[in-house]
Length: 330
Image (cartoon, rainbow, N blue to C red):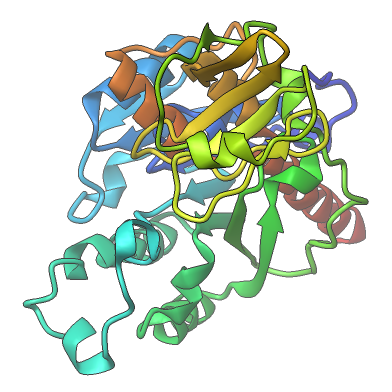
């Protein structure tokens, strides 16, 4: 964990409200960047309990932010918000709807996509110095996306956007996400640092798994492995190919299930296992002392929904520096 000493966020006493906070990847990253996490809100009680366990000094709200009274939340320097991406992402075979169908109230995803409006409502109520929003890249294809951006601009915010890959920030996982950074003046430098790609092997246990005695869905991938005694990443996903774990990061970790496997071909047979929840948590940047509550399936969902800790930390540092520069110039 990086030191908080000499952090602009810490020296300025910057505070955060974390909306759609989940288990706390965004909060943890911002805490490491020097912010004080004053409040968080999420609709899932298990995730709120996990967040409370790891951030006991934070004010926790179990709330549906689609229709919440924003005056209930404390005023903070920064709002971080990760509104639902379920009906923006193509995951699960979802296809983009025609504009007329997307605008119809018969669209099952209309209310889900509308969670983004909570950002505008909260910004109007509290006038944050800065707002950071996270979603999938397809968020920018939403038929109301430009209208939504204009809503933030109408409140006096300058909008900057970027698509960032967690693998470039030291997370051993390929995970591209859209980020919007909104400030009341000045420019936030969103130029990514030089890539810091970490292979999956850095966060994997030494356990090769059990010796295979039957064919699996990933067996065709295993058949492609030529190197002996070298762990390979295999995916329970159509058209996936095996990747050396010591050379490649994981593919995106999802909330829908553990699709990540590890296979090793040896002279004595083939060994295979699924990645553990703890290994997936490491790939999201959580330290091993970060605790998760709930069943194994619920923990898997919390990890897959999380914002990678190192990306949130970097964005928090960038915003804090911009606020410090603005204060120094005043």
